[in-house]
Length: 340
Image 1 (tube, rainbow, N blue to C red):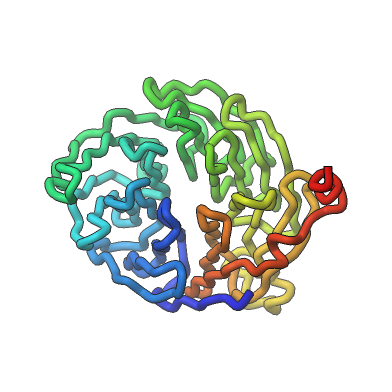
Image 2: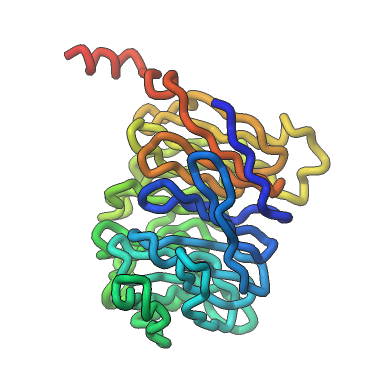
């Protein structure tokens, strides 16, 4: 499984995302640039210029027409994927830490930072797709259709539950909450991780009925979208920045490493900069993939489950296409099941 090394950023990676078809990979970093790559061979297709600060987050609409980014310059920008032009800018009082399109692409949520007397919020915009031919894309609403204010602990990450019914948010204090996506009221709140260890990432299964959270408390957990029940827990030996669920096989991939500021004092082996594979059902660690020389900040899995990409503090993206042994590997009990 030789990785393809993508060098397109001068600073550490913040988030990478495949589109729904899995042929494009979008990446954002602290260097203000948003890159798009061909996922198959790692060729860079282009960049989207315009942000004035570190770009924290990116998401692409299900039909790959629009692209959303959130940045430290307090803006959410909407881009035309094909032409690279910025079709809309929404301004906020604080930085935007996470953006995500709803499963049908009709809405976009953005998580804003708590700072300078402003509380952290989750805002939702209704998204228009113009004439369907890529025209009139800049005809977007100026005002959000919903605003959720986080009174207690600020949201660090958020996403949509199945069919866009719920908004699920991970908080700075290690809790996960479920909001009604129409009214914005909080329905559930569960202390999923250790208190005061923030949740760094949240990624959903392909049908969005469950999701995985990665936390600073060195664990990743799978929760049910419906009632936030904790279904599985994956302990590791380093703070986790990112966790992803793999389609096709019942695995999860976790990424982390100790905080960037402590990195220079330890060797790469101690730094634990590997992507760790765990079995989703049995909760065992089954393998690691080395390569980065800084903590892993973001992992994305190809929607068809044929490979994954990881982005690190070292400024590189490594794209892996899984080999046959990955798909053949099975536990004895799984083999038994197959024989029946």
